[in-house]
Image (cartoon, rainbow, N blue to C red; front, side, top):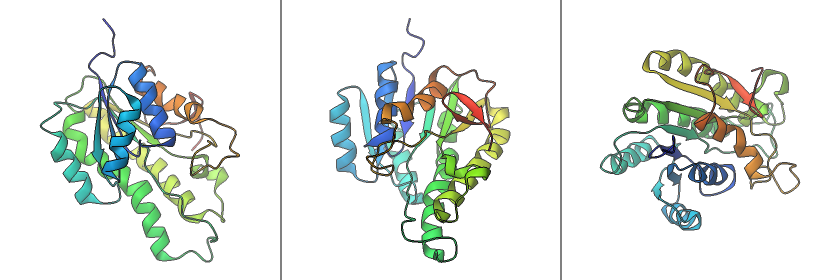
Length: 233
């Protein structure tokens, strides 16, 4: 029997880029995948491209009501959740630095990139607890590492730094519930966010997240990884 048969994963922001590549990789391993997008239409279009057993859901991680609505939509359709990939995020820092950034821009970025993943774990925890092998993956960034913080990318760096910290704390809180959680740096990837000159393909950027979702030892939790290796926060 395929060990991944009947396993189910939810991926936020999966209508394109790294999230879409993660969905493709998990489907190839036999997973049922729930893909989310802020646009119901885009989620449905991506589900059609995947040509597999996919549930498309409208979900905006920056809106708690949207998260709760998505959960209520899914409850009649699923009895548990095995993998949660917090991939959705924003990168709005063009033209600002730490001396000029507004409170509004900081709020927008941290709400989506930090609070969003925390709220997703909180909301979907009852379904994750029903899995015998629940795993959570937070898509972070090298910009969230202490040594790589940049004054010219202020809100994004701070949001990913905070996400890394939240990953450590969530690992502590989830240990007793037998749920593992890690943060991933996908590298510089050719996506709408990363740009056309980035050296990595979405598939390369997705590899470590897919590995953590499927094969990684369960004693890896509360860590930051790149290329399947633990790196420094």
